[in-house]
Image (tube, rainbow, N blue to C red):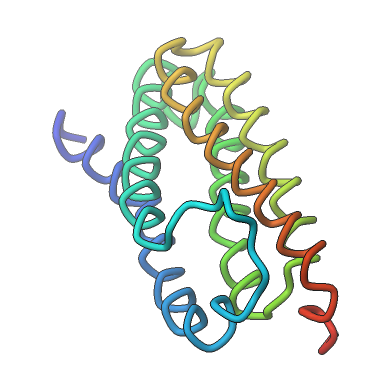
Length: 164
């Protein structure tokens, strides 16, 4: 694969799920999310798009670095890339659960699993490419904030999951 194609595809891939999720999010912000009780410290809605785009690009490039330096899917990078794929799937699943199903409770359960998968990805990336693992630290920080926010929304909106 060319020196430009592989990193480009790696950066684009995580953004695809973010783009798909944005359709679910945008539809549910005015009809559901805005009516929820939210803490005063939550970031404004306009912050999420640029932050997620930056994080998706950095995690995509980090995955490319591990793929490149770890021998691809058949080399030492196989397990770290499996961790990466798992956390990416969990990342993409949060939006349909929280916004699509209107379920802060299951969104919180899911984001805790995501946090663990990100930590596992960072740990496994570190053995292949330290810089790649460091590129994921802001992502872990943001998901930590998102986890706290999801918990507070669940706690402060006990009726939000009543349609279960």
